Length: 145
Image (cartoon, rainbow, N blue to C red; front, side, top):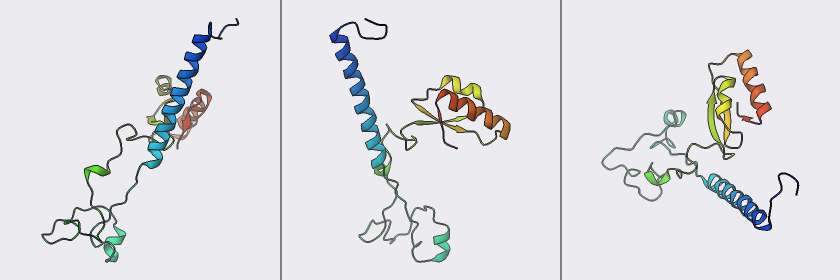
């Protein structure tokens, strides 16, 4: 047989099983990422006062009789541990790749295009940024910024 082809039928089946298992794992990961809830928690009374609406960031409700803190029906949910993303996809890019900040073309050598997506560091100048982008595209990386 030609080089690169499996030697026997068993090896061919084993190779096919590995490919299918990898495909299933990727699909499972994609489904997990798609189901990842991006909940936006509201500050108490942000729906009522314009000054809170502008600064729409989370503040824990702390009043004794605060209805939101008491988690009464009709009030927005508060931040809890259960809203955390699954460990398998925490910090991942929506494409399923692991984001990595790169500040030189040399940093790309230790990365894999199948696993990583490249973000070019903010402190990098234009000339070096173009150099990194060119090197990344040559090696098959996706550049996010």
